[in-house]
Length: 460
Ligand code: GLU
Image (cartoon, rainbow, N blue to C red; front, side):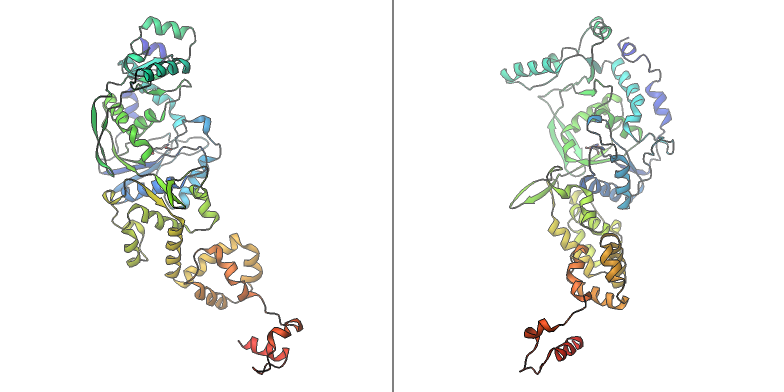
């Protein structure tokens, strides 16, 4: 009755939806990257996608992209298209992804954008309400705050749960009254768990972890009727048949909640791998990379500095398994996907993003690159980023001359950006004029006048 009152427009059942998304082949390993289009693309998204591809790639695999735009307040309009473009540049070619602007029905598990999946979420939320596992909550922010101060004063866990949740066991009449008076509400999950108990969760990177049960009645659908991450994650990864959820550490604390949600839905949960947060060295101390303060958090920073894609990928592969570096030295021409990566060799506490290390990876690759390949890559860089130098100087010189210069620099160049500054003197005609007389004429060396100096210089 309550479910009908809340969702009269939803007529399909969970089974109807499940029929539309048949199970994938059981031998497939299915991974996904799920960025939220809230700003620039963070370097973790590349790191995460690389992990997705690496671990799926060993098997029969599907790697797909899902856009998680449930936080519409923070959404940036251009971000979605840009994310796809950037991920493609890294050859992180997913097999399924959202197509705009029409959200065409291209792959079986569409739509791949959460804002297009509202109907699906509502079907499952309606079912939870029907089974008394979720309930509408009309509490205002102020009410929640005042409960919180009472809890704090009594030194007990804070927030909405158990007896502190006013609407958890409210009567149908009371709920109906609120709805008919157009009161706004969110939907909360009715947690069956208790703060005093512990539960074991499994993770491919952290292994077995004993942690507290998740006792809060979290919001699974906001007042705007948009689901929260927790609920959307469970529904989407189930209906898209993800087999390994690889995501950042920030979500690890919610894992008991996600296990509970899977259980409430009678679904088998996927495997999880939570990778450690990305940190950086700030002078002598370490801290988390900040979206706001660290330019290297933005993937486009690496493009602007013209780090080549293969350098960045190799660098990130080093961060995944440190032994990759030695393997790469022996296997210069192989694809990184041939390395035997393993979850168990990943650092589970922190990953240090270090530009100096990235530079050393670059210079090593440059040093060992075939000269013609290096020439082509550098030419591409110059034509794009140093257009004037490229057209007026580089192209006007003989190719062999350019190759000689590049060969000369191959052991010293760290990033392409340095090329112009390091080489202009090779390209500038050296002008000798009367003003340089004092500097160049040297009777002892038998350089008696400026013409002789010029002759020697040309010879040199
Ligand atoms: N949209 C989530 C985030 O940006 C992704 C987490 C996940 O991979 O499940 O944090």
